[in-house]
Image (cartoon, rainbow, N blue to C red; front, side):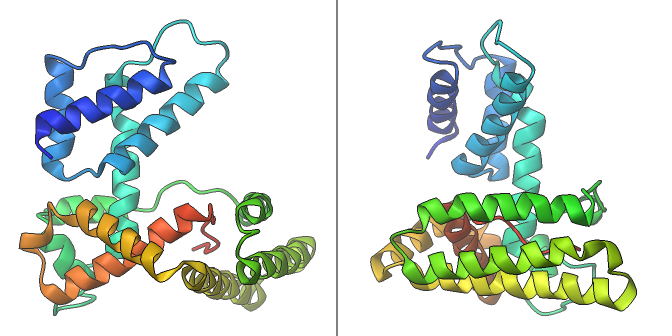
Amino acid sequence: MTPDEYCREIEAYLCRKNDGHLIRIVGPSFERVTGWAERGVPLKVAFCGIDRYVERYYARGPRRRPVRIDFCEADVLDVFDEWRRAVWMLQPAGANDRGGPDSAADAAGWAPEARESSLRARPRTSLPAHLDRVILKLTLARAGARTAPALDAALERAVRELDRARAGLRSLKGEARTRLQERLQALDGELLATARAACATDQLAELRAEAEGDLIAFRARMPDAAYERAVHAAVDRLVRDRFALPTLAYD
């Protein structure tokens, strides 16, 4: 896809989000969006960023004018940063010296200061609020997992377990709290593995092709081992999106 084609896809998507109102992406806006393409921002990631801005725009009350693409850039780049972190599982410098997450980041052209910025702690919700959000999203995810009985059952078990954890959260301190966080990490992996198993072989092949397409801008600069890890992580993210699974881990 050329930068011009990328821009037209973004323009068409924004038109749909604006209820059919077309705002041409030209001039500085065109340079802004083609810059996303040159940086390797996948279309789906850009769409998610647009969605995030539009959702906030709706939340402020009735819309008065169509959304312009320039207003969405901060959200698009935030989602892109989240995607890179999820796909490459970035670690502090020196964590892996041979083709690991840092090597993948360096191969993708990240300057050290950019990697350090991406790893900087962001404001986060409290653990109780995190559990409330996760329980709600797991409950909603069950609606999309009815055709996969094993995943539906796993989601139901997870909701019950987290409900119990949420009820006793006030008394959790120190090691008990740490064990809960470790359990959240493990449960997240279990649900993701069950979701992967719920996908048919041809579905996983389609998701891999999509993941490879998202990573194509970085392929030539990534070692083979790092690339395979990135593809696997990207497929995991697509599986998570397919079943609307929240991230249970809380660091």
